[in-house]
Image 1: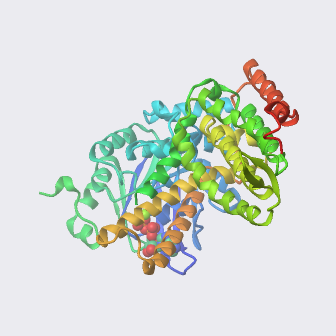
Image 2 (image 1 turned 180 degrees about the vertical axis):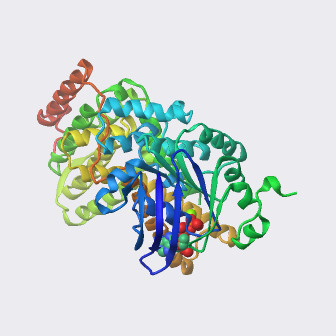
Image 3 (image 1 turned 45 degrees about the horizontal axis):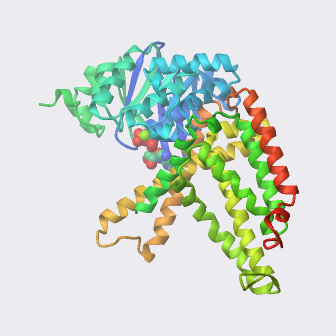
Length: 239
Length: 267
Ligand SMILES: Nc1ncnc2c1ncn2[C@@H]1O[C@H](COP(=O)(O)OP(=O)(O)O)[C@@H](O)[C@H]1O
Ligand SMILES: [Mg+2]
């Protein structure tokens, strides 16, 4: 589904955010990307959809190589949920916000409407359709931001720290919702407990490089490895 | 502090008001935009010494606010922002245009004074008209109709983004201000020497924010043009309102009521 080979991504100021990163995500998998602040998680997500284009290496989604010419299709295949929903929601009301994507892809109003309601339903927030986005609670905003991305029916969902800014209850409910979404997901997160519960695979980034990769239990419960990568053991196994 | 917070809330009150369901709210947005524009054009078209002709136009905000059940306070607050500009733009009239125009109750009023008052009144009326439009029609409806009127897409987009962005900017300012005050509890305002870095920081944060917002939009297929749904249908009441109001406004503009009002006000 997602194939990243040996990419190097540099910011305009010369900072190498990612070096020699390779990874694979299979269809239907939930994969967590963990790492300390500044490890390069967000940069990785942005380069998958071509907001940052790698200077070296290649990224392909479903066999389609990400390059300047096909960004439109790539961004329909892979949807990004940004870390801060306020960066993502900007229309006057929730409905228009969710319809923004489908309308950009020139779906008819009827098709758009259908997609909006389907994504609202998938996140259990139909009742918010008429509200204005900026007045919702953190958990609601997050759900709307995810619904907005789902409306394009992507095959791959890229989530940047989806549980940040959420209270424990909203967090738990969101994770439940994730388990019900039958989509391939790549989740950048600090929330190691979520990675442990939800994901089949973890990739640990450290200073822009893949530091470790494997089954969550083996990686996340390895105290030494976690410490070296600047992380801590999941709360659920700290006593 | 409080006024930054109020600014955010203020920005949102108009939007809340626009969610109402009165007769005026239910009118077709295009009809409201057209009549508002017509009203503004007619008000502005008055000769600058023609105060008496302008006075009947006060009926419009008064009646509309009553029908749409819009409270006075939030609109007047916003009005206060516009009036000082008109005040300073118009005050020079009073000094340079001193020829006496009329005597009223033994007082002499110069042409300059009359021009000044009529400018203030024009500002008041036009700003009220726009505020009433905003309080009865949601921004998405307005922008959608502007797009329909073939206003260039980029401009409509600009309006929406500016409006949205204003909220973000005020919010950032508020957050930074709170952080500042918490670390210097003896102050109630930002000290002048910190103002530079405060504003600089605000600017950088806003750029950052705009960058991410734009990236997020591109991720959802945004390519510069913009579409909004348009589900409003023109009903009979809309035609009635459009034609009726147009007729009334034209009569008020072109029939000389000062004859009836008596010559005392005629200028
Ligand atoms: N816009 C930018 N310009 C320059 N450097 C950046 C930019 N965004 C992030 N970086 C740098 O790239 C590195 C990776 O950042 P990021 O991908 O945001 O990490 P994470 O999401 O894991 O916290 C960091 O060292 C960060 O300072
Ligand atoms: Mg990040």
